Length: 447
Image (cartoon, rainbow, N blue to C red; front, side):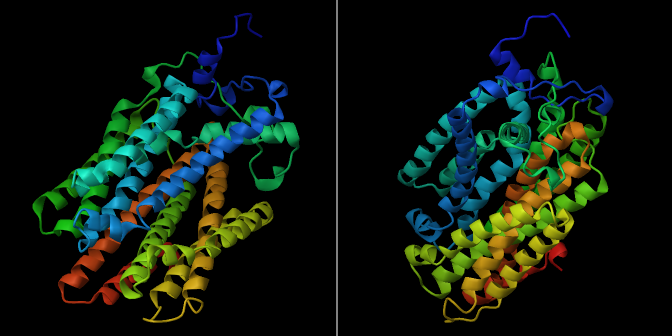
């Protein structure tokens, strides 16, 4: 044991949550401060509630522009431009999915509490400006505000290590429930890995710069294509530059001493690909389900939202079912079931004829799609946690969250491109929407 004086609390918050880059056999562990025994139940539950609220806000903001999309677009005189409408949702998903992966390392350097509070102040500012953007008359300014909302949320959402700490505290204090789930978080040694003397040197600046730039440019090109058309030179030029930057990012991560993303093995890559295809199809499903309600059935946003009330019940049932099955059924099987649910929701809704009653196909589509969401997320995290080296297990939730949000934005861009060219060739709105659903059905893991 060292006789050195313990660092102050702020220093501990910066260093005690950093994943070590040392070999697994040389890992140094420390139970988080304050000690478990000194944390009251009220304080613990308050902390968990705040972390859960961040997750709720991140998803609520996704729907914030999705449900009232046609009316928001009408405010800016863009109600007939579906490409611009899709940007209102895609801009948010783009920034959340791009920046959430590095937010944990920023928290390591600056302190999680500081980053968490600053992110909420930033979110409040950009939410206010998004609401006032109607006075600017610019939908592009609104999209920028949405993107910066996503950037704020990417830092507010608890990163993987903070989640590890929370779950570890609960299991340490209130029993070893869930120990058969495949990841032993009850042992304090699996909660936190210490990396002392953490400095900016441990932040992979070149990897972060190339990775973020590449992801932003690729996503921008895919979502801008439906707005101006793929014949416009800057669209495909940005796509090419983005792909080149991602190639540079892959090379940098292989040689960097402290990479943003560690080397991933084949099972991890395949799992992330499944999650990407599944959630990109989900983004298409939920966006075009509302489009179908507005443009084909001529429903108001209120009625269209009321029709989604069963999703809350289905989501709770799916969550409870997953919690009970995740340690009994292999996670790979659970993930396969989730992919089937994503596909099922798209097929049911995509084949819905005009004028059909709600209960015939829309209701079962909503229920089935909810099971895809609530099964895929925990299953993906569990698979990654089991397949990643122990020093990188805390990265699993961040990787999954990144892929989920980024793929939603990518899916909307691809579906928008399909719809754009169908409408350009003389198809009506109904055919364009169904073609977007077909695009979602084409996801390889779903097939």
